[in-house]
Image (tube, rainbow, N blue to C red; front, side, top):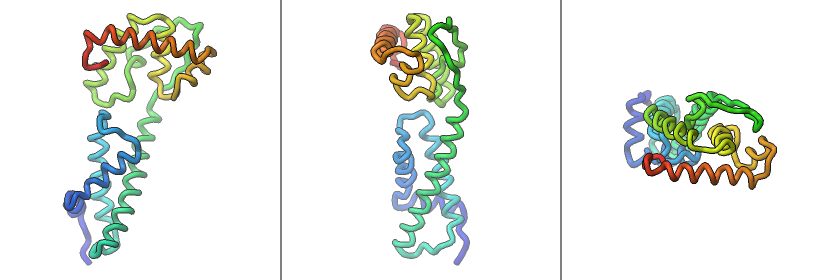
Length: 190
């Protein structure tokens, strides 16, 4: 048996539509195709597949052996991509705010952390900066808390602020109305 190379792994990946495996891993991780970093994660998955193929020690002559290798590759790609995503999530800076504070955010705080590409970050920062200027104080607080990945729902924000969910819903409603008014100037963002 000869040792496979990473190039052999790439060749195998693009034969018989095996590339669907990487798309399947990303779908299993709930990463939507329209996410900014989807192509980067896809390429990372392809490289991981090629490495797994090169390191795989079993034979690949029968369909059953190929299926075993594909199952093994799926798990390895999933684990490595989860490590990458966890590392990205740990990089998110968390801050606490109180309703009693007069808050003036920095430019970095008004950027949607989920936007991965530099141009998207600049566009988001400009839009959120404009939205900040045109919003009321409670809507501003909601905006800051909603952009933090720490708060998964409006209920969590309400609990953090010590107000009812209906109050947070009103802040959100005001913010959305303001964003829609601004949407005429920023059609790509709203």
